[in-house]
Image (cartoon, rainbow, N blue to C red; front, side, top):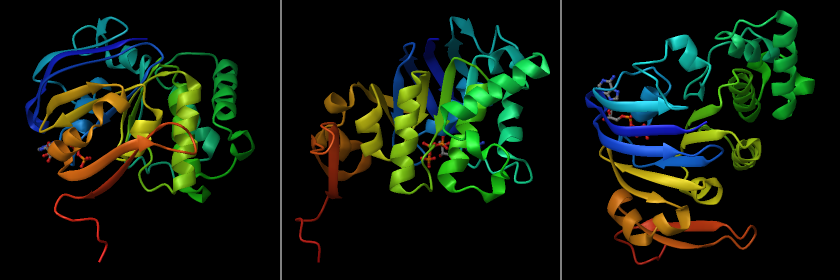
Length: 255
Ligand SMILES: Nc1ncnc2c1ncn2[C@@H]1O[C@H](COP(=O)(O)OP(=O)(O)OP(=O)(O)O)[C@@H](O)[C@H]1O
């Protein structure tokens, strides 16, 4: 399913005139400094924050003017920041809440929940309390809930926050392997560089660059937008683009 944002402006978050699209099956990263408008933009896509101007189309239909909240939730699923609810629920119960927008038979719902748990590798964890899980397992649970929603479009808002490096790589590998149309705000630029098909760079609410990471994440752009010195190379372990950074005003001497 395709996502198209045209002329999107959201005064409350400073987002202004954003054009962005995600092709079916693409993993697109949204990057930018703190406060540049990433979460605000995503919230308008998953119908939590009404834009002041412009359109958000998912699968060709206007999320705000044509689709009801329920129909929109059947197309767009989200793993948002601070999804800390559900501490007294089991993993399977949390994943089952992804079925809320649908009106399916209970047996069909159970089957879909089981499949979602299997896709994220949590089948054996289904009856554990969410509160007892590691950070990585919690994020995989929330991803399974989004998959159970069967939306066709996945929105991820900084999904790797607070995860250790293994859990970060594990989550992005998993998201990539799903092949679901995904728009993800990512703080960790090396994850964006390694896993995204394309990235959009936001600065002060506007798109300042977009394209494949190796073309977009140049030292001059990163200097301009993030105020750091950067080097774009190749990760010798994976062959994917990799960045290293230094503050703007240092010579490289760590003392
Ligand atoms: N409900 C609101 N009321 C007022 N200002 C808001 C509101 N929501 C967001 N903002 C402001 O809009 C700007 C963009 O915020 P947003 O959270 O979208 O940025 P972000 O790029 O996701 O930041 P971060 O990387 O820190 O998560 C910020 O200056 C923020 O303070």
